[in-house]
Length: 311
Image (cartoon, rainbow, N blue to C red; front, side, top):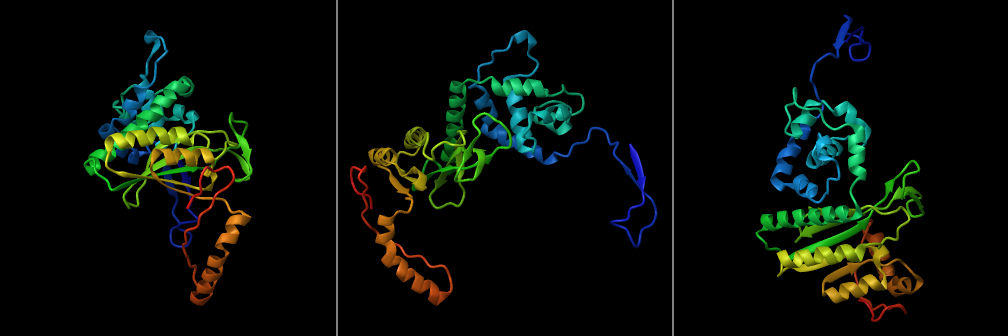
């Protein structure tokens, strides 16, 4: 298809001839950068290992696309900016997307359709999803073991809930007062080695939008701490959580695990009274320097529901 136009925006003053724009180049793709994903996946065997956690319930004689191919198609598509299965039909013969699945970019078999991908996404059981999450953590920890030669002075586990806004009547979408909107509230877990700036995600768990901040945290921590102690037996483990996790159950669990932990606490009159002398001093420093200032101090604090005070 060709379209003739006199370009008035880019060449308003010094170019007056018609500009012909053609959109008829065959077998083109705008996703060339996605090719870089394939060698990374090949090195980690990530999609292959995740696909092994799935049980294929389809009739063998009717299967055109293997589970690992469908998983790769979905993962690479999302990474390339196509989060919706509805994009699958338009991308079924995209040369780059086919190349990512080891198919000839021109003559290779078309990729899975939207109905095929939608059925694939809805087929796994909760047990299979758990196995996939467990496998993801194994891949991340093994990768870091190889990178660091099995040695690290300290590994910091960060757990953070984050909002994923929703805009319809999706299942598990609820109003969250803190984020002032309807959303999911997935839990994200990351690992940090020593004082490196990089963090490596080892899990993300989808949760309802009205889930308590700490929901599922102990189960995730139990699994990852056990894995880390097998691979990094001499390494100090630190757990870092924000104020939404400061419940007796989580604090008791962290004490039992004998890990170093830092847990934030929501403000309350008792704590505010304890830190007021420090606040007066830091206000003076800030007024003098004209910058944000920080002071630190240790205090003992215990609520009625705690078995012992925290420092």
